[in-house]
Length: 362
Ligand code: PMP
Image 1 (tube, rainbow, N blue to C red):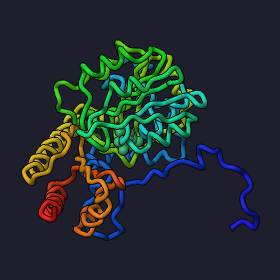
Image 2 (tube, rainbow, N blue to C red):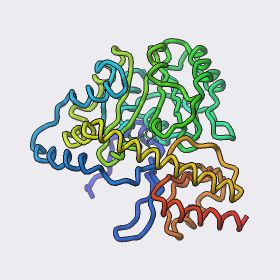
Image 3 (tube, helix red, strand yellow):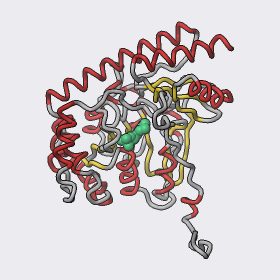
Image 4 (cartoon, protein in one colour):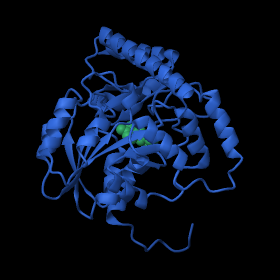
């Protein structure tokens, strides 16, 4: 410990930041199912592991700063020109860069709550003033209330679809109405982290929306459906001038060479097919788990992501402790609810047993 106490003040916004609480991790050697971080339970594909191993040999060199090949692969995947894609160290970093590119000190940023816990943190770090709009009781975003929360001082509105941690998606029609109501100089960030798990035909096609609305930016990630959470690759799709602004504030060399090569290997057509088959298996598991929970008598929001949400209120922390004692790590949000990721079949079964016990204790 230094001899002198710290006399340098932290920025007020930083001193007041809420903590980002990561999902619990099993202690080394502990036999616990980890359903606490919306991760993909499948191990990396052999072709991806091979790309990682080969790329690791170049660890003494900086990566391609512009991630040219990865950006081109993502652009082809999404169906936009490469100038519209910006990559970063996980989509949470890209979100920070988007906000830093547009938010002036004190600008209002509207976002739903409860939603992704990084939102209040990234908004405060960017110097923005958070304006939260409660999600509805059924877990859906209240887009009319979010549009109504926009003032002349609003610079950004964030739309999380499917919403983490509640699960529902916004509908194409309601998003269109929302965009018509929001001024054109307000940026609308559509966070599609769980896009590949969505099976709702009424869900919007983000790229189509972006083509018609230059004030929209899509936020996507390879952490969930693509199973690369540990390598940190996320991206934004935006109008070219906006994309250039986001790139300008991005961390130099922010995506490692290993991460770039693993992501490129994941986007190869054969890998893509296999990965999307895994996603379909996870979607089938999600639907099986949801049906089983309803059968148990739970009234839960419909989910289009790789997790389910239990609005348990004050019982949340106690229930989370019971789940972990039963060998299942879940993610509690104190006083609000529990989020349970869809994992291996055995993990989901272990959780269903826990949920059945909660039911009979009611
Ligand atoms: N957006 C949402 C809605 C999320 O749930 C997450 C991950 N929890 C992210 C973004 C960030 O993911 P990553 O940084 O791994 O790309």
